[in-house]
Length: 133
Image (tube, rainbow, N blue to C red; front, side):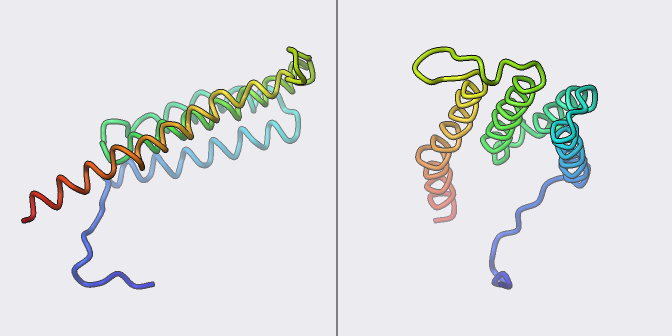
């Protein structure tokens, strides 16, 4: 689908885009380490993956999504660690195991995005509409 000629342009600095692409490389390396049970690779890739996802937090339009990504990577990393160190199947009660605790950061990420789309984005849209009138 081609954008209309009058569609607004969204741009981020090229250096941020390159960092975002590098973030994907680190994330994939972390997951390869997890898949192949290469603990040093999987564990080492957590830090750069999280650091890069957090880098563009000062751009208002990116903050909610990057927070959600940080929670997603945190949940995913916790799940990997629970499997690496064997507490993924440890029962914590009521059928909840160690890996199920990853639901906490997954849920936090969903809540951040829900807040953004239900509360923040409508405010931004209204402010833009009022400013252009």
